[in-house]
Image (cartoon, rainbow, N blue to C red; front, side):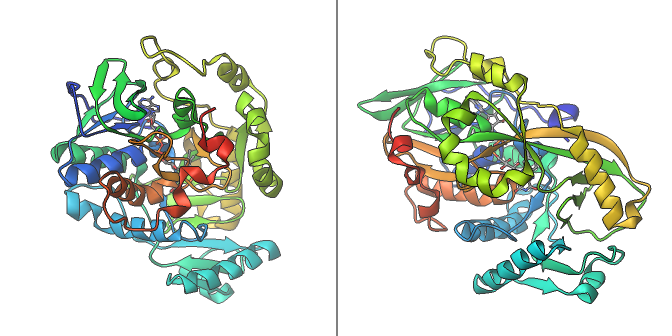
Length: 439
Ligand SMILES: Cc1cc2nc3c(=O)[nH]c(=O)nc-3n(C[C@H](O)[C@H](O)[C@H](O)COP(=O)(O)OP(=O)(O)OC[C@H]3O[C@@H](n4cnc5c(N)ncnc54)[C@H](O)[C@@H]3O)c2cc1C
């Protein structure tokens, strides 16, 4: 559920005149980077235009998963899982992480072929993923209905509580010396001789030589004002909470048209898997050719929608001066309306797959804007054109699980330390020169 509906800790601080590192954005990418930088004794300030985890980072399903990841991303997600297992002990927090395992259940030939191929790949990568036959599946998920005859099970995947994990990590960062300012939009970046020299916020300027942009779905707009093009589109992800007396296994489960995760508050977060709304916006046209290959392979999962967002974004300035109000102050928290047919279908499909959910009912519905890149892999690293500027964004719907790993990697890159994983797949410059250079 979005944190806006819940009790949440507040983070405020007097803005310092200078800091070693300033982070733009208080989602998991920014907070995890702040946490590892603060742990290393770096003087770090994080500015969040709304409140910590107000956007994607509290709205996600809470899956912490290596299974099904792009091979280029696997080392980072495996590193991230190792971190999740130890975060609570290491920082004295409660993220709600549980190593429950995750299972994908398959019933179509295409799904079975996809997961059979992935299992081979997982074996090579040293992951304990196992393909289960019908009997094995009943053993792991008793009560699953008959059409599901194959499963892909990864025993060391897990889940955590999105609404609590990121605020808890932010609290730990503050205890380690980080400063976090909510309701503090960053308007832009100042440079001197081509290098980062400071950030301008709505409440004043902070001198710094390193800025990490972790602005989620806003990163493209933010970088655009600097003349840097970041190919990123927004996709609407919808989810719901249900209440039920059913007792089903503790692990998150995904079928072709449903998913569920048990929550620590006693309910379940559910969603219709492989179903998202792609709002048509001016960027859809600007980035049409970048995203065309993705559109061709996943058009079945995307429902294109022409609506008010087109005009909201059309009217939004793409360039501004740093002494006037910016779009980040106009929209403090992106809180899109959920696409209710997806939630209704998710519950219907779930009841069909697991009759134990027969009496379940929807209690809450919400949505979040997923920030997608053309290759569905994030950027985590420096932007070479502007020394001192770093980007951690474009997590394409799976940044909650890989957030701690991304935070650690970013902290290492900023400190010029040996990175925990090869950062090459995450380079900003992998996008065409058209994007890497100033527009
Ligand atoms: C419905 C849904 C389900 C998902 N399920 C999963 C899942 O099960 N597992 C998984 O791994 N991932 C999942 N994801 C994806 C995951 O939530 C995201 O990848 C991750 O949270 C991204 O984190 P972030 O920090 O990059 O962005 P965000 O959490 O969006 O944070 C960015 C922050 O930057 C702030 N900001 C922007 N511009 C400025 C500015 N100029 N100044 C100050 N602050 C600024 C914003 O207010 C925002 O708080 C899901 C996402 C959605 C929407």
